[in-house]
Image (cartoon, rainbow, N blue to C red; front, side):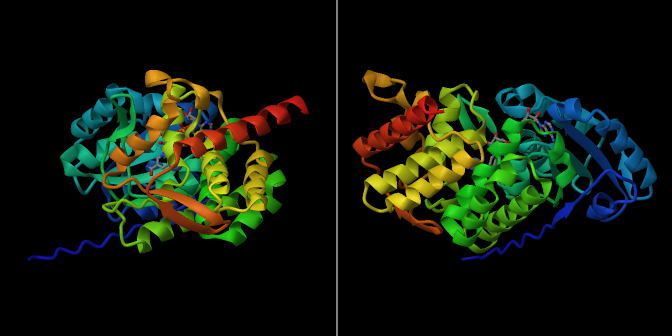
Length: 383
Ligand SMILES: NC(=O)c1ccc[n+]([C@@H]2O[C@H](COP(=O)([O-])OP(=O)(O)OC[C@H]3O[C@@H](n4cnc5c(N)ncnc54)[C@H](O)[C@@H]3O)[C@@H](O)[C@H]2O)c1
Ligand SMILES: [Zn+2]
């Protein structure tokens, strides 16, 4: 038996003004003078049109290190990039055309969807060229960009095609978040709430105390949220003993079985972060009805989600599927298949403490959804 040990090391840095020539974060992420192709999220460019010219100017100022091989490639932003093969092909074509080899770099600047698609293209070209991620949304800075996964959607399923591949570096520029829509600003907060719920009761209490500041777009509060969430996500990947998710347990996917299904059922009208908020409320309501989570804790979870402006229920939870059975229930089997092995669902028995179950009682799943529906509708009626 031969054992092969692979060590992964990559920096996750936090900065402001990453494309200011005086900021050396990006320059220092590249080891020696190298060819660089830069791919930018089209939604980000719409909000911040100076980014492509700033990239060109930055690389010119640091021309002794960064050899920018072409003007930045602008790709569609949001889930659209993961639902279409052409952008991934265009990125691979740029890697080929500009002779980006395994010692050259792809720099991806954008939201979680663009980083997932560029990451997939980079990981599969030449079996993996170096990727520097510059996440530009709350969700990607606090969760997806610091991890080791990429992927695109196929057969109507989230992330059906993708790889595990560590980035070369992750550079979080908090200033990029300033132009996010309110919806995207808030939706990333749910992944921080998720990781707080399973790992860190103190962080959860901090989010409760700063919910109003977060809702009203305090960049200071958001900087702390992003930093702690990224740290907890990264800590899990580094210390769980299963960075490539070979086992069936997936605590970071707390709330995600319903979330993934709801995203597909709403044709991605729901943002990933919004769907995760609903999934968290759903699984906490379930844990409460199953007798595992105190009512006071359930109200804290619902309270904090609502306080930062996130939804806790969606009418797609009622949509009928095969044989009139609620379609969302199929999400359980799809989740099991996506993860592989035995169905393993993470629940919490108090804030900050997770446990696992291997089946959910479908009647309780529906009762939990009905509870959240009542709460949502009463909330709407009483304003
Ligand atoms: N790989 C992982 O481990 C992992 C983990 C969690 C989520 N994800 C994936 O991440 C995706 C969601 O990412 P997201 O929440 O970042 O949303 P997103 O990437 O869909 O971006 C949301 C919108 O914001 C725009 N945008 C990006 N940055 C902007 C900025 N600074 N200013 C203005 N607009 C900006 C985008 O163009 C898009 O329209 C989903 O596809 C999800 O599956 C992946
Ligand atoms: Zn997620």
